Image (tube, rainbow, N blue to C red; front, side):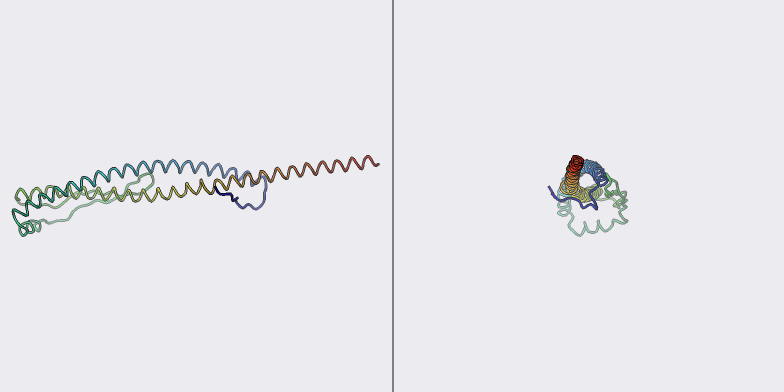
Length: 210
């Protein structure tokens, strides 16, 4: 804990009142940020689970497609497969936007249309084509979740640094400054009492002499 105090222009009662109000506000902000950090961690865990499950799905799809492609390659050869791939025309239609997750802007990706063959295909090649849309949608979902993890991680680190600064630096300094001022005022009050007693004693002594 820091033992420093906050610099103040003059040790007055007004400054003490201001520091107490500032301490109350700082503690309130600290509680709000700590709660926000908890909610962000929950969202981060949810996004992590989604990204983990999507990555597993992607790996499974790739393994399945590799098996199907290997079978088609063994049956038709690379030239036929290359010719079939070149007959695909058109563009992939993607809608990219953003979502607000507890104040954190994260991407939103949706694939609407994927070009495909219009002619009859061998069963092995058709199986590859049927998996293309699922594969691309899975890749888009994985990109969305992993980017969300990155953005949430940045916000979590930022909030955690602020919370630690409030806990370890600002709040202790405010408390130490308040204690310092209270000790200062107590000391001034004692000095004032002693001064008053001395003045009364001197007055009484002079009265007795007269």
